[in-house]
Amino acid sequence: MKGYNYPVHIDGFGGHVTIDQIWDCEGSLLMSGTEHCKKLKDLCLAYAMYQQLKQRYYGMSFTEEHLQETCDFVFKGLQRTEDDYERAFRIVEMELGFCHDYFFTKHAIIFELEATFFVLFLARIFLIATCVSFVVHRTLSVKTHSAIIELHSKRADHIITLLVLATFLLIEILQATSYLASDWCKVSVTCRYVNRSCYRHNAFIQKLIGYIGRFAIFGYWKNKIGQYSIIPRITAADLSGDSQPVNLLQTVKRAIASSLISCECPPTNGERSLHGNHVLGEFFWALQGQSQTETMLIWSIATDYCHMTPPTGDGEHMNGASENEQDTKVRRNVSVCLSRYCTYLMNSAPELLPRHFGDTKSAMAEVKGEAYEALRSQNVSSSPGLTSQNANSESGGSSLRLQNISYFQRNEVELPTFVSIDASRKIYQAMNRLQDQEEDRSIFMRGVKLGKQLEGIPSSALRWKLIADFWAEKILYIAPSDNVKGHMELLAKGGEFLTHIWVLLTHAGILKINREEGNNTTPRRQPSQGDV
Image (cartoon, rainbow, N blue to C red):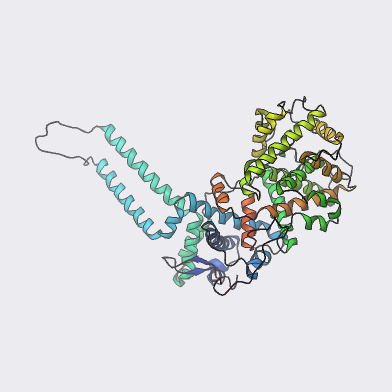
């Protein structure tokens, strides 16, 4: 972090502290190299990154965007190797925690006026204790000479008063405890530790700061991502192998980090991943001549089609113990998870995607109707798991059955028993019987065509590798945008995984991608001295 003088604390009671000062601090608390030491440093780094992200929210220019050091910060710092993905995403999660608190709690205000807050806290505790003592000694009463109406306090009055005072006391303690357990307090005490040499030579204060640094009761991120499929009865619950949400998310993060490292520059519309697998010429038609929404829907349908493909005997659907079989299984799970997450975004959070959300909603409704009509033509719609709505209701919205399926998919819980492997096989057979015709160039049929083309790849290992590589680059390609407000508003609902990727790319200097003209990004310019 040498040379990165990102501010962590500016003047105030904590003094002026920058990131490089924290990394160069000679105190034993920050030089021990323990996990606790690394977490404190990462927290301060996350806070400094949050300050930059807040500038984007208020429409201020991100002056570091075009500096090479900004790109190096992510590619040579946070994300030096594929194995560093956990730390990179953990820091981003901390940063979004600061953003959440800034917009939806009082922690940011307390952080700025920390000394005043605790002085007032002690004053309120003293006043409450004084009132309690008066109530206990029954001296909290007003006596007048020759009162017109005599009032005598009862035992119930004292009990109710004590309960009210106890409630006030509990609220005050909970508010103070909430702040002490927050990341804001950890950053504050770390800055004081760096800025005051007397703290670095006091064993008691170091132990106290260490205890506060380990004290935590909050968790902002649920370690799950939403799932949705255009094809009914195809859900996230049928992922094989390590399909637990947390474990699966870890493999997804690793795949995205690997794709980001291999890019070494702004991502493309999936072209680089296909070129790297030597199949760009065969699948180029599925990338060009259509909007981003159409491209994602086509590849999502194709991915689900390949997911329903019967076993080939080369380890695709087998629980083999060999390394190749395990890699194929992991890539298959990553492919399906990212594919259905992108479909989930189009269905539930289209405002975060490049195209106007109204167009995305319209395309989703259209392809649902196409899927229903195509499967009904193959006599699949009468099966127990499929909805029986007509094309008009499908294009206008989902039926109750489909809404229930959508709920289970978003919450990653197991579906009812009517969702079976046999049902998926019937849908696969029906889609396999569909014939591609020149006059029928619907999104659904193009997705089926791509699925059949992918199915024709002899090696399932290569098939799932190129699909996983495509989706890992695709989600990097759709993440950059100027819709800061949309990302911040969703933090109140637990946040979206796409927001984490968006933040990571922001700090790499990839703020937007020129998708209209086919260029990777807006042209880089050299920063002026005024910008610096």
